[in-house]
Image (cartoon, rainbow, N blue to C red; front, side, top):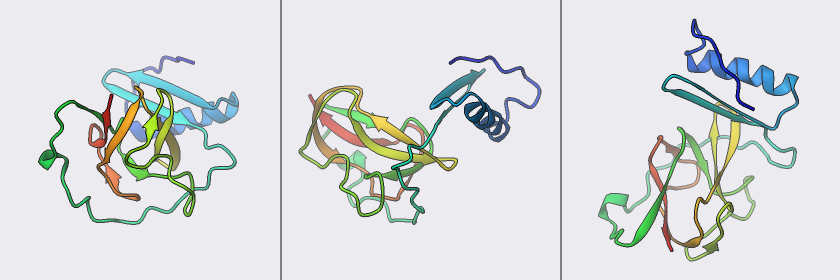
Length: 150
């Protein structure tokens, strides 16, 4: 569902998220996305079986992405700022491991943003060659998460 939001306080990300959250509940939607100028907000309802994890600060991965040989590999980047989780709940099996073959549309991880769990799907099929961030690590928009070999 696309909905236009008028300017006048609506370009404040927190206010826009609050208004969209209310609309999400009111219309019983599972997901809503709105763009206002350069601001884009996407909210997704957490499924009942998905537990909310408490973020724990973790040191960055040992090998930075810049030190890797990425020749011929496709980088899958974080589409938002948030906390990266490899599994749907603490103690659950991770969605993917290094070496796994994934299909287009397959869930790779979750990024928690503003108390919402967002499933991040693979845009392409291929083999996961490298997971570049640790479970529970805060990620930035555009930060490399995975290296995928086609």
